[in-house]
Image (cartoon, rainbow, N blue to C red; front, side, top):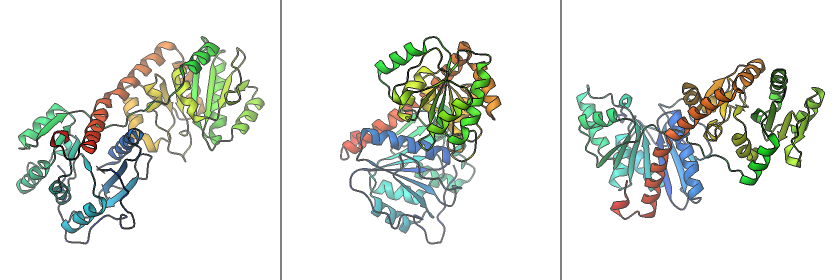
Length: 404
């Protein structure tokens, strides 16, 4: 296991000095890579949906994690930690007084973890894999790491082999569970049954594809792709949900110039047999369109600038996923879907048109949608278990039975 050794230099949180602890419960999570950071933010977002007054602090090792993570929704406070020294650990815990600690993977900081354990803060180590357990050949590190691992109340391993390796290392923490990987989860957006029923009736049996979060600079490529696909699929319907910063009026004017017949969903426009494009400025409507469209293109990805959008809600609601090359903010989610055959990358408008035509065949889209649903749900058990463990610890802080 990669292991932090204290060094002789001033330490502490790199940007915590001016921050103060908010009132109420505070969950502290430590991210050891960017994928884990993203998943922790997602966990924080879900926790806050259940307990709005909860605060979620995420730390990372400022010397190891580069580039530094950027603030994401769900992470209330983000702090880079310095060297693992007793004074810095004491100051950090005095300042933040966390109610629970979640530590992800390796890169242990034994002084900080030990200080937290001494204060009887519930400690959970999660997302531990065999790749994190690489210290056996260094005897002195092995003994220190084993002692540090045994400070945790529960360890959540990614596989049975990881659990077996922990036991071989002599880890005797109260509980070692096999829970799988920590991954971003999906909280699918809502839509009313009545609205879905009405839209399904209006669309009838027509093939439909969705372009979600469309930026102004993507209008031309997406509309050109749709017009090209219409040559082979004459009844194809495109739904465009624009990014909040996009100029939807410019989109409507551009469609008129391209002789594409459109309707404005937000103003009550009807979908009839002549409608070729449906336009909405309301991203809250995505809950409806992800359910209705067998195929979704996640925009904000054809050109650099926005970093893309998460595809997990679309996959969770049964839509196959297409995406462009610029999804830097959600690489892990797209990689998981692509590896399972649930998502496909396109380079430009021409590639988008070809993929839309090919995947409009019901059997192709259905196979991708099933694969996507399996990917999205595979990490749900761990997320749900973590939320239960955290909330139980917060509700029963003095009850040892409620500790993880």
